[in-house]
Length: 509
Ligand code: BES
Ligand code: MN
Ligand code: ZN
Image (cartoon, rainbow, N blue to C red; front, side, top):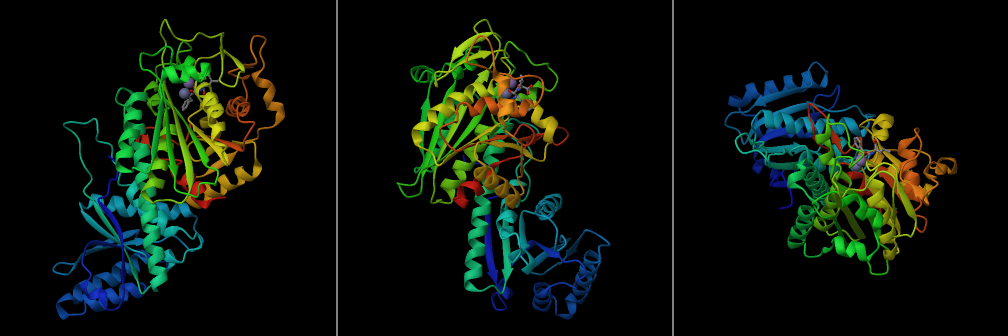
C-alpha cells in the first residue's frame, strides 16, 4: 500500500491539432482578473462550441468568464451537454503578485468543487501564468495539491466510510514547446509523488495508536520495500537498542507493553561517494506523558506524536517513487510512552548512547529522550547534514501556531536553506535562536543533563538538549507540534513537512 489516492495524475500537451480529439469530464480553467479569457478558452470555444446548436453554451462561457474575471463571483460551472468536454469550471486565479498560498488554495478549491459536483475525472488547464510563474515550481505544487487534497481517512470506518468521487486528474497545457512540455510532465510527476508522500504521512498519523504501534510502523516500512525494492530497511528491536546502549531511548518505552522499534530506511539513488542526508523522526505512537501523566482533555491528539517519523516515511516513499538521484537515510525512532509499574519515574537517571547521563525530571519530555540516542546513532553515516523532525513541544504551538514549523540549527547556512525550501513549497518554518545563554537550562545536580529546562522558551530549551547530541555534524531541528495536524473541526494530519523536506533533499544544497 502506498497511499496513492488519485488513480492517475497526468499531463496532456494540447495544440491546435490534437485539441479536436480532446475529451474531458469536467475541465477547470483558471481565469485571470480583468481578462476576457485566454487563448485556450478561445480555442476551446472555436473547436467545440462554434456550431449553431452550441451558440448558447458559447454565450454562457463568455458570461462565466466575464463574471469570474471581474470578481463578481469566484467560480462558475458551465454545463456542456453533448460536447466532448462535459462541463467547464471557471475559477478565479490569484493576482500576479499573489503569494504561493493563494495558488495552493485555488487548486484545493478545484478539487473540492469537483468532488462536491460528484466528478470522477477532472482536467485542469495549466495556463501561461501557471506554466511560467515566477515561483518556478507552480506545476509541481498544483500536482501535489490535487493529490494531497484528495486524501480522506476511511481506514477505521466500517459503515460510514465514504470515498471521494474524484479519481483521475489530467493537467492540460496548450501550445508548449517540446522542452516546455517535457518539463511540465516531469513537474506533474514529481508533484504527484510529493502529494502521495504527504498522504502516506497523513495516513500513518491519522491511524489510531492501537492501529499504529512501533511494530506496525516497522511492518509498513517492510511493505514499502516490497513496492520499492531499492529501499533498504533495517529495524532495531529492544535488544539491539540495548546492545547499542541507548539507555535514554529505552527509558521511554519501559512503561509500555508495546516494544520500541528504531526503523531505518536507506535510499541510495546518488553517487556512492556523496555523503547522505539523514532525517530523524520522532515516532512516539502514543504519548500519555508517562508517570508525568498528561491531562485527559484532547489526549487523543497524542496519537499524532509520531508525525515526525511519519514525515520521514513519506519523504522516503517520494524519493523512491521518482527515482531521485540522492542519498538519504530516514530514521524513525518509535516507542509508546505509557505509565505503569515499570515506567521511568521523575528523577530517574539514565545513560544515553553518547555516555552523557540524563536526569528525567519529566517523563512527558520523552521525544528528546528517543531523539538524542537516534542522533548519536546516525553519526556513523558521516552525514552531509542531519534534520530531526519532531512534534516536540506544546510551547511551539503557543509560539507559532499552526502555520510555521519551529526551526533551530547549529549551522546558519543549513537553516537558511531550510527556510528557503519552506518558502518555495509553502510549507514554511520560522527560526528561533539557539544561543549559548539558553544552554544553561539543562543543568542539574544529579546527572550531566536534565531533560527539561526552566519555565520559559520550552521549544528552544528542548532543542538545546538535542544540540548536545548533535555536536559532530551540521544539524537542524524542526518542531512540528503545531504543523503536523490540525485540530477540530477539520481534525486530521496535514502531511507537513513532507514538501519542505523533499525540496531540501532534492535541491542538493
Ligand atoms: N508530544 C508532546 C508535545 C506536544 C504537546 C505536541 C501538545 C503537540 C501538542 C511532548 O512530548 C511533550 O509532552 N512536551 C512537553 C514538554 C514539557 C514536559 C517540558 C510539553 O510541551 O508540555
Ligand atoms: Mn510528551
Ligand atoms: Zn511527545
